[in-house]
Image (cartoon, rainbow, N blue to C red):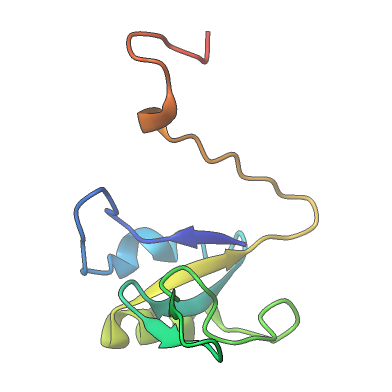
Length: 106
């Protein structure tokens, strides 16, 4: 699963850019995730951050309609997850983790 929050950065951005995310709806299944600030307390009393977790436990098999997911994300200010097909791969590169002054893609 891959999570998308259009415009996400180190700063909290709570505006969902539905138009930017809609372009992916034909390529994969968009599914609802918890709000960026969602938490819950587990049985041990620990507070768990849920912000990048799928909204539904059965997310791997549950059918989702991407248009409905985007609508819900906009209304509820939720993150959006992507369920990839078997023939898809995403490489997530975070330039903050690259050595300073080096282009690790060369």
